[in-house]
Image (cartoon, rainbow, N blue to C red; front, side, top):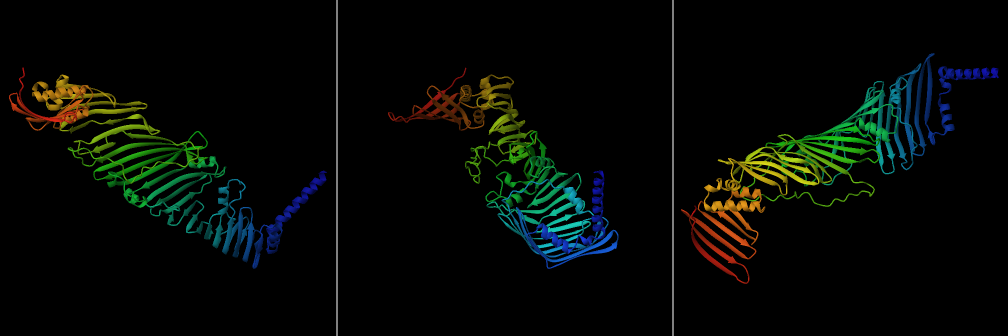
Length: 639
């Protein structure tokens, strides 16, 4: 048994050495036209094949140096399997190389030229799963000493899939230091260190948006730096004038399929992108469909840059990755500024390719808006929605099993220049700060505050020391404010605190005054003791209806700077009275109520306590329709 084993082993060894010797010293015995023809007939790799001329030659230079030449004319064949149907005619296949040991020296490039190739892709067949490609191994082989120079040209390639037909030409030229390939105006340049892919100078986006100009991607270039541990990728280009740049890293070796969740997550975690949009007005006029080619006022006069940085980070769940976008908007005009930072976080589900939620934060770095000029003597204009935006109900087409998207918004403006509004109604710029967290369409928590302000409203000076509205759902918003009225002889302070619908308020003054005197000073600039009887009555009645909650504080301050001297209301009779100043000594008083009795009177001061009243009363009651006139001379004596 031992002898048989030794004999068999020796025989196998001798046979192997003989085969190697024949291949090394007499390769023409195994590699020739006849053996190639026999192999194609026996293995049936190709469905049909033929050639017009075929020639393979071997030459001897030394024991480890052989020349190897070949030339085939009109080599046509067909190949077919479950997913591919290929037929082509190669007009010429030729090569001329020297094999020196285990290296190849190119005398003439390996040449393959074809005038027609037809490829059918069977898309309804499932391909068998294959292991990920060993990219670095194949890349090293491409630039290894056994790979000859190449000159490949395929004219008129027809690729037919289930839904489209593609025609293209393909050309490839390789030498030891560089490889170039061209197809449909795409150019690939490869060196042992990197790959550069350059598409045509502009590529039309296939999906056209109604009303918009055709959009083109321009000046795109993909660069891959080939390294054994991994491939850094860089993609640059522009969508019209909007510049974009994407960086990523492909780890080697690839251990999972390209479509697997693990591979996608690993690749996305290495990715980051930047998008820059200069000249917003120009881009908007090009991109946006009519009638949206201009921003609504007051932003329509602004122009500037939008810059977006996108990065990714890991989440605990294997199928989730967090995509973070940081958008900086810098717009300006000679009198206005809009500098906003928008932070957006979107957890992306790599199984469904859908976002799990959206969290957005707006940080107003610097906003200066000049409002339209408004008349101080007329009511403010009616603000109506922009007519270009149609109010239609949104009906998303989603499956019943899909849960709604969770959207959270965070608005923030936290410095002196964050939000500034300029209007002719105020002497100073109105500065606002706010920090609001919005979820499910409501403000959950936060605040809005007015920074210190000095101005005049209705001809009265006003100082807002602090005013803050705090939100904490479901509690009603709460206001806290300190407002000062720096009048010439008195300093009056108003403190507000409590729910915005019905805040508590209190007045104080320097020097101290009774409450009735404070209202008199606010209305007429003087305490009760310094007022004439009419003004004194107006101050007292105003105090009364303020305490009843019928008149608001804002109306009070409006009356102080207007011809209206007082407004009265009797809850018992439900009659209202108002007195208007017509000059230094004359006033008009009007009244009316539910009893159908309306009245008006003009009162004139004659001096030294004497007054002249002329009045008219009109009853609209159907049972007693009458009109009464009267004149009254009155003297008021004060003690």
